[in-house]
Image 1: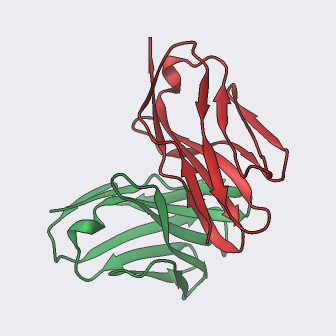
Image 2: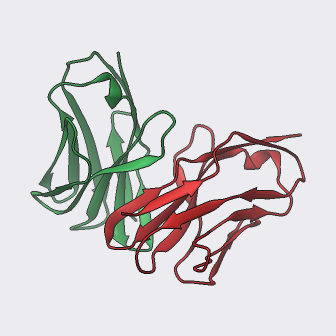
Length: 112
Length: 111
């Protein structure tokens, strides 16, 4: 079946540091890939997505590229801010299964 | 516009007690609905999905059940809660493969 593996936190960085959160997946066919974010006290919301190989999703300064050859969808941001502190979930849909398959989430803490 | 509601927002229940969580959607008809659970230290896990009234598919065997009594209502239930049922329960509506709308979630603590 489908699976998503992402680095587990907490990940602690200083403001303006470069961020990478690794995500790799296992799925048959060509799934769609997502990053979701959950800010403290709020619900889950879509951050970015990519639906086919080599697509790059981007939003709020975050980027992730769908790499079919390495089955990866790493999340990056060039300069993080304190307001980026949240839990980030990598997810996929497709590969013959119904519903989303999520990673365990990565808790990101940005210190001023 | 589309809206998805969950009730209650938080719940504390003793072991062995019954459970009923409700999810309702507005602004659409015949939605595909999903129940997910996030347990402590684990990712979001798909529990049930439904493509229509009375149609339920279970992804993970457990002591939970789901029902779809109306087009825009999806209910998660248990006859006897276990400690391991504690977690965050999320209802999701998906109009298509690329789009999902998340409910606000229900935080359940079983003592």
